[in-house]
Image (cartoon, rainbow, N blue to C red; front, top):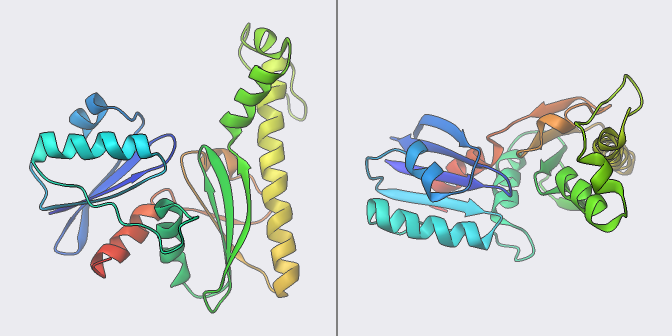
Length: 232
């Protein structure tokens, strides 16, 4: 049995592969040994293939695998050193689909990649994730944090109704507007419509785009499975 692990900056997704087929798929909301111990199977896999946004998570999970199953986790690297393996795996899966695509990976940061029909890659942009935007505003702007933390965010139909709501709505609307703008510009550049994929722990919050969206929470795992089937 092969265990596939995909760690973004917020959560962990995993699945088991037996005879080439996925037999389980789940998400772990916390990155900790206790959470892994409770959620991951106790029976030892014959192989662990993992990718992570964080080197700290990768180091801790490698130690966890040695302690729990007496096995060394494999950490394949993307061919392009400037690209994380989580991002590369997602693109690997989408690249074999027909048509022109945009892939949005939303977690601690939001990245947008474009793929032409022939597989040519375009790095379309990168933005801090919504939580990181809010954190920066709290830390760098006088009075915002104390006001926002006094009460929960309140959002109206159009406008935020308090400070916390304003911070949350601002980060969300900036991210959505930026993604829609980039997708539209990519369509104009190529002279065709594109299929937009969105994945990552913050995908649900960014699904309200003007463009139709294919949300695929396990996109990285699909790519890892495909690469694993090809022996990486």
